Image (cartoon, rainbow, N blue to C red; front, side, top):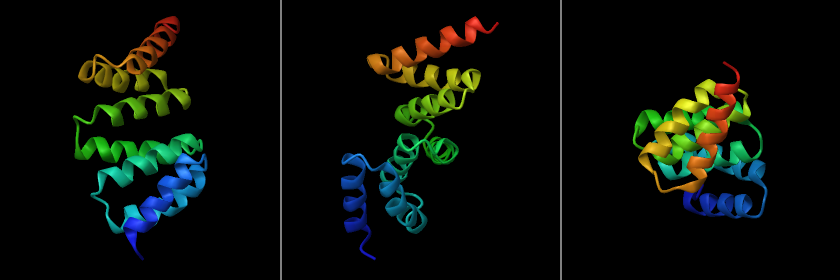
Length: 122
């Protein structure tokens, strides 16, 4: 299997709005190259976009375990946990992402939304 060709094909599927198709193509690539963060990140995003949230969480936690300074993985993990209605867990990762990349408005909006939700449940 030509992994690069499959990755490019998966990227096309993802960009064309078929995250499930992209995930099917990416899974064997991640299995063959488990240390490739770019492929794992796209797989996590494909899972997130196709509402395979537990699978997205698994991939994102692996990315963070390998690189705790990956602000994007923290952000998407926070968003994933938010969608799973695990707001208190999400808040931690959204705070980390926002602190690491303070100029990102999307990070701030997600953090504020979840923080408001958590504070409202106290």
